[in-house]
Image (cartoon, rainbow, N blue to C red; front, side):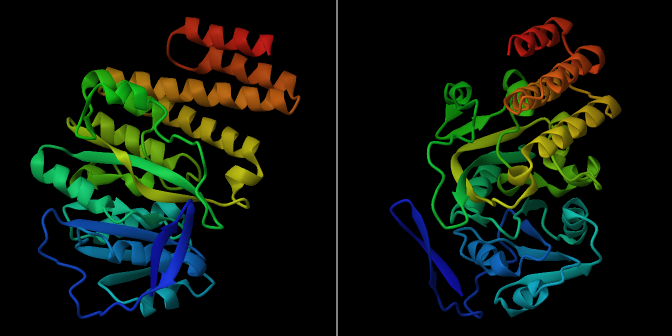
Length: 336
């Protein structure tokens, strides 16, 4: 089995021997958190992801690996790992369907997620479990994370909490309780990521889970629905997990295409969803506005000036929110 240690800014994987009878998992631990691991052709990294769950300072009540029609050795890797793993196999339906399938089978009152190419830091579950114990009313938790290169080196000078300065004034021992005043920022900035999200299973089910058939920004759709249908949320400011940046991913290899897809996901979601909380609706509009402006600036960098202008005009005519802000964005793009 694999273990990890840090050597300066480099992540080094070493070999560990883990006794499968050592009681790595405690089914009665409270709160009971099920960890869902979707995998599609992730044999190369799956063992590393699973080991990061097995080595948690607070035990998951179960690990559910959902193989989404892999054609490599992902299933064999999952079966070879020691620990309390439930393996589900299905035809390829996409990561959202795989996550949803895992939640359907989960026995824990809480669910957390980890993709097969990422990993949890040792106290990731403990950080959220302790908060749940202290604040039983909380329904949704997230946390910071760090980016890593696939060669095992950390991405430098990248703060994943872009509104951290707003949070620090509200923090209590490294934790921020999301007030209605902060909820717009939470919704608009998409705090954390899928692998730092812990959510009550009943809330996840009530809002319909991840939208299936959506390839990019599906996590934003879930977050907005969960924020809109819950009263108490919290954010842990410390990094809880590692997100590995893959040069061959769609987001990296074709950023314009991924930005267009994210913008379309935001737009369709906002147009088709009936918000209950005004601050969440405002945050969703902020996210859409930022996604549109980011795409326009990327188009300008690629010298697609007319496309950038057309994109912003579309926002003025179609998007929700204050028209003054949309006109200001249009003027910014015109000025280049």
